Image (tube, rainbow, N blue to C red):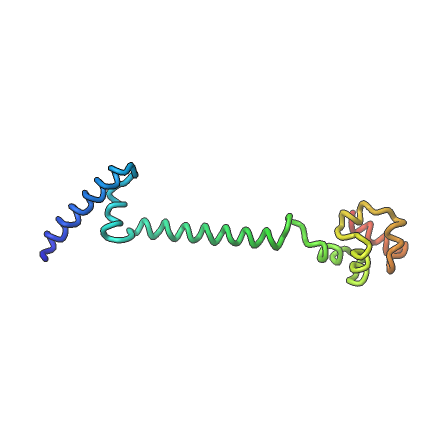
Length: 131
């Protein structure tokens, strides 16, 4: 088939597609009709790439939120990051219901002194570290 005949057929097909789309109330422009005849255009490939990038960014945000929780470190990490609290003391604190720095701030000195491994000097260090 001659190239001019092919071009004419494409134009006719585009017109037909536009007429069908208009008749069912869809918004359709020449690019959409062309895409249906010729396949995705460069613009459509860019849009698809951007959507994939947006999906990746969204996924990474979800992963980041899942790992970070509310933005604070997990209670296990947070207790052990406090000066004066080693892994053994952190485990003892958790067993007594102190799971976060906030829990320690709300606890009385007597409650914390009742934890094995916490004496007056360590309590002072912990209170200083918590601010």
